[in-house]
Length: 473
Image 1 (spheres, rainbow, N blue to C red):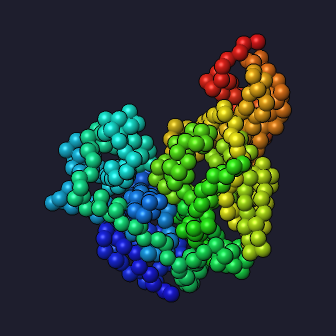
Image 2: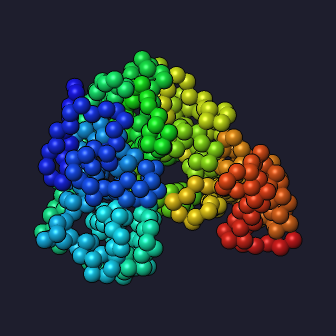
Image 3: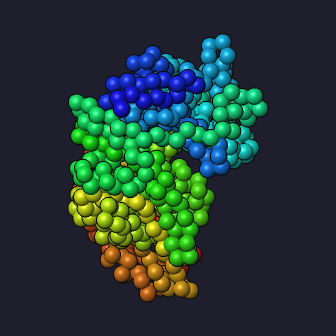
């Protein structure tokens, strides 16, 4: 097959001659939809934001915003995209566009289409209700955390967001939510710069992976898209796994919860609904809503970055991974999965199918991220802590660390120093001193080694003073 179809602003569009590494952004702009801008080409500015239709889990559609610069065009086969041009028109402004205009939310205008798209996604969020997120109309202003305004016009943009009402019954885009979302369709493209496969199911994906063990697995694309755009990386074979039903399960069992590796972080957050408090604390600190709408748990783990935010959280939860291949499945503790910088226990032909978190959960948890910006930034240091007290004695504690070694690690020395000991300020301060010695932190443009070590200590002290009853002594 050398062509496929996707729907753009309500109209089917046939794509011919697409290459595996063509981004949705470039294709849209080549087609005249230039409201989509390229600002950073790595998902940090939001100028390229578009809406995509996705299943809401109840037979309807959710409209979610994503970075078009990170989406590989063939991955959109059979799906639906709405750009800023499809939200409204000069003669019939959408409520979001109207509020942005009358409240002065647009200055140079370069970022405006992206803000409009992200704002529209929040406008149509079905869970939005008055008073939520400390806003009179329930608008979560963090929905715009992935959109950068270079003219510093954030106040009128926030005013526009907080002035929005609810979608009327006859709202054109709102009616899309009542019908099923189109599902990703199987596809095989072959061209001079590589092959693209979207298998129909997991067995087919594992067969392809066995035949092409060096293939690039594409899920949310938030890491691979940066490689393609900034480093001009190209893969001989790309296998898209984001739409596989077998990777999108979330199941509660008596002794564990199983989370599919292909679920994006927004879906996981919504479906968990706070039932794993440590993850609930972590989610809002992971990049931006635009990124979380695409990034998958399996992808964040599989890249094996020492500064990925999910491993410290999952290490604290004592998680394990279900790895699948054509030969079957095996389970590996996350603490044993990372073997070196960007190296893992994955064998040729294997992929991460699911994450398993044991139950019951430790009742006292905390996640601490230190970065140059509060939101939408890469960690200098990340710390996840999960603890169970027996009276005032530490019965069990797990501390996961990121950014202080070549891989995410457990803070075994600090854990050992606290386990079985009274939970007192003196003991915590001694454990914090040991925690500051964990790993082999380096000095780079994000932080010095000394700063990283200091933040490890501060994280445990902050956990003690904020999360537990303080016992002096």
